[in-house]
Image 1 (tube, one colour):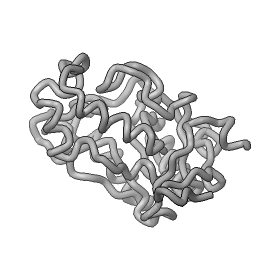
Image 2 (cartoon, helix red, strand yellow):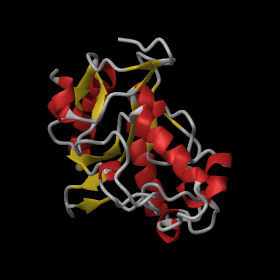
Image 3 (cartoon, helix red, strand yellow):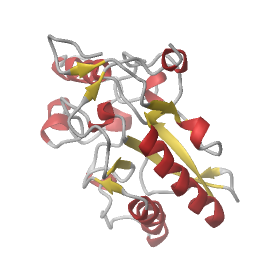
Image 4 (cartoon, helix red, strand yellow):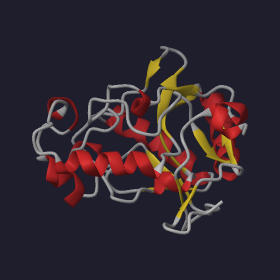
Amino acid sequence: MKSKQTDIIYDPSDFVLLSDYVPAVIQEIRYFSTYNFIGDRIDGYEEPCALLTKEAARALRTVSNELLVQGYRLKVFDAYRPSSAVKHFVLWGLEDQDVRMKPYFYPDLQKQELFERGYIASQSSHSRGSTVDLTLLDMKTGKEADMGGPFDLFSEVSHPDYRGITDEQYENRMILRRVMLRNGFLPIDCEWWHFTLGDEPYPDTYFDFPVSSEYLRR
């Protein structure tokens, strides 16, 4: 169903729980927690689960199968993101006083620069349902692969082609990138963890239903 007042869709019928398609996935949905660049649970995140369009979930299943053979599991930080969550980001950006998480996520930038430099958008591809933020978990060590910088660090260090890191850290980024590209996902130039399905089913549509397994079953 489509709102007549806005261009936002509230129907989750083409979305699935990622864990149903990729049983090996590890989920640490940061915007359900308070450990994120704002410091609060983000609006619209009712459960710590990853939702995606069926098409993106199928493609990610193939990614997962390839990486399992190489000794890695996927760890997902965010997938579908409601438009209400993006609005939360924007409103936070207008509040100059709240910089609680600056030392951890944007130590070298002012809040306003996060929007100017493209780290935070007023409309997010995540709200179209086929974008995912993820990393690798090394099954030998049981720990995340060292990518030379953490998820949601708003810094030049997070650019996929940044070379001020070790060769091993850079190669870990490339392992993830190569498999994602091979399976139809496209990267962006400022976040090593961010990929969007190239042939996404809703390239011009934004959704605003909650991140909730129960909502999918309605």
